[in-house]
Amino acid sequence: MAKWVVAIEPARDPVASATYQHRRQRVYPHVGDLQIAMLDGQLAERTKIKPALQNAEVVYVTGSGHGVKRAFLDRPTNGTALLHGDHNDDFAGKIVHLLSCWAAEGLGPELRQDGCRLFVGYKGLFSFFLNNDDLEEQVLECDSLIDRSFAEGKTAAEVKALVRKCCAETVQNLEDGGHLYSASWCERNYELLVFLGSDDVKL
Image (cartoon, rainbow, N blue to C red; front, side):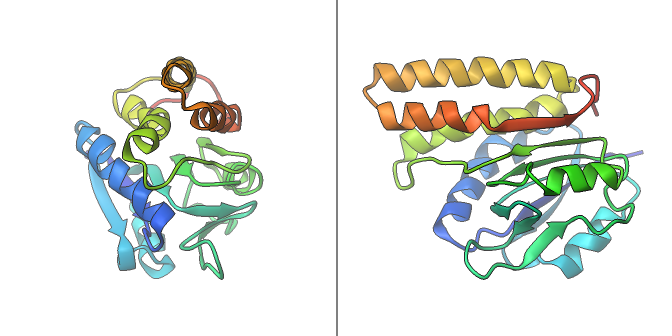
């Protein structure tokens, strides 16, 4: 039986467009045998996301955009909730990873209550320099490693260790290059990264 990923990429503002462009190069071509149901741009809406999640072959949900404590949004201002805890079984048995602010603070625990096997996200503001491709890529690369590592069959514990190593190396490289703000933001971002679930969870 094929294993599917639901990818949610609204890309409706400069920040979400930048994260999506990075992930188009560094995540989605590198998920091995996993099949991708890509819901990007105008396809990223609740009427399409919900039936995609209900496919019994979906094992992984990922995406980038904006978040508040209890929802994943399509845009930063007056946004529509694309994901929130609906108290149903749409997320049962799935791993969920969202690159957005705040999603691990409220949304993550709610999805866990709804049966999500593992939630990976950030419990505060995720920051990076926009419009500087090199700095942007370096900071976002640590997050992209999460999806690629799960696709390789690694456990949550192994993914955490790889991300910590990537972050430490990235911070050192940024500091060596004199990019102290980006180094500080990168370090803080990954201090906010939360894995909600067992360390032995894997695809």
